[in-house]
Length: 593
Ligand code: OXD
Ligand code: MN
Image (cartoon, rainbow, N blue to C red; front, side, top):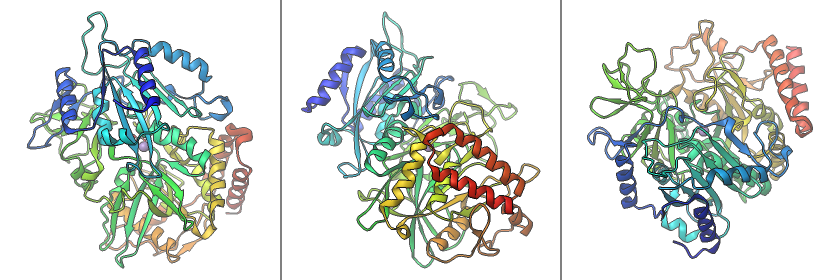
C-alpha cells in the first residue's frame, strides 16, 4: 500500500476497470519472487531447471503467437498526428482511450493485479525516473525484478511524477475458465500517450511488449521527455575501453535489434592489454555534465538478451552472467533439464525438446530454440560490469558508434566529418532485419539511429533534436561519431570480418582517433583507417580481404544516395534542412569519385 494519493487513486481506478480478484503491492523481496515461481509452476508456465546446471533458474515457453515485439500493434497517440510522424502508428488519443477502456474492462477477472513500483536508473538518482506497472502476469513481476530496480525502496521514493504503465495479458478467468500456461490475446495493443506520459499494453506477455520499463518507458516515453528537457534517450549500449597504457574512454553504440549490442557490450578483447567493461547493453540516457561533456547512464538493471548465438566462445561474459539466477524463454530444453540454443555448442545434442514442446533431433530442419528466445538475468552477475555502471552521474562518452547489418557497400569502419555529418549517418542507418520483431527476416530496412520502433515522437523532429543538442556545448567536447559494419560479406555470402573479440581492433582505432592519433584518410563516406592503422597482428586476414572490407563503390554510393533521398521524402516538412544539405554533399562526393 501507499500514502501517495495520486498513486492510490490511480490503482483504485484501474482496479475498478480491470476487476481483478485481488491486488498485490510488490515489495521486490526474495519471498515474493519464490511465491511468483510457485504460482507459475502451478499454472504450468514455468519449470525449474537442473539445479546443478543452472542454479535457481527457470524455463518458460510462450504461446507460439507471442514471441516478439509487435511493431504493427505499437502506437504513439500524441494529440496531433504530425507529432507521431511517418514512422509510427498513430491514433487519436481520445478514440484510443475508448478502445482501451473497452478492452481493459474486466480483463483481470479471476486474477491478481500486481502493482510494481520501479526505478529506471539507480534509485534516487537525479537522472533516474520512476514508473509503476500494473500487470496480471507473475512472469512480468519476476522479469521486472531482474530488469529494473523494483520494490519497497522505490515505492518509498515515488512522488507524483511516476509514469503509469498498465498491462494485461488479456485472458480473464471468468465463468470457471481455467488458466493456461501462457495466457495472451490475439488482439494486441502497445500504446503510448507521450504528452500524458502513460503506457497501456494489452494482449501480450512477452519481452518489450510486456516489460514496460524497457522499450515503452526507457525509449518511447523517455525519448519524448528527453526532447522536451534537452537530453538524449537512445537505443545504445555503453562500454568502457581501457588501453594497455591504462587510458580509459567510454563509447555508446546504436545498432538495430539483434545486431550484437550485447556481444559488443561484453566483448572479450583478442588484443593483449586491452580491457572492455560493461555499463549497459541496450539503452543509454545521456545528458551534458557541468564540464560540457556528454554523460550516460544505463537505466536498466539486467539483460534481456537474445540466446541463439551466445556461447562460451562467442560471448563468454554473457554466458557466465546467465549461468545462474536466470529466466529462459523459448529456448530448447535438454534431456537433463538444461537449456540449449543454436550456437551454444558446436555439436548439437542428440535429442531436445524444442521451443514448441516437441521432440527434436539434429535431423530436423527447424531450429530447436526460437530465433528470438531470450535470457533474462541481472547485470550485477556480469563479470565485466564497469565500476561506474551505477554511478548516478553517469560516465563521460568519448565516441558514438552507429552500425547495422549490411552485406555490402558499408565499410568495416569510418568516422564522421562533423556532428552534423554524424547525425546524417545516424539518420541513414539501415540494416537487414532479424527475428527480434515480428516481420520478414533479411530485408534491408531503414532504421534511423536504430530507433525506428522506439522513437516516441516524429522522427524528423528527432533528427532536429540531435542537431540542436550539439549546440549545448563546445564542439571539441562533443563525442566523435563513427559507423561500423561487422556484417559485410564476400561474393560467396561469407562474412569478411571475424567479428566478436576481434572487434577490439576496430575499437582500438576509434580509441586512437578519440585521443587525436590513429591514421585516417578521406573517403566519400567519411574518414577511414590508413593502411596498417588497424592492428591485424595475430589475425590471419589476407590483405585482399581488408581491401574488400574497405572497398567503396561509386555506383553503390550513388544508388545509396537515391535510396536515402526516397526515404527522406517521408519526413516532409519535418526533415531538417541540414539533412538534405548532407545528402547533397554525399552525392557530390560520390559523383566525384
Ligand atoms: C531488444 C530489441 O529486445 O531491441 O532489445 O528488440
Ligand atoms: Mn534493443
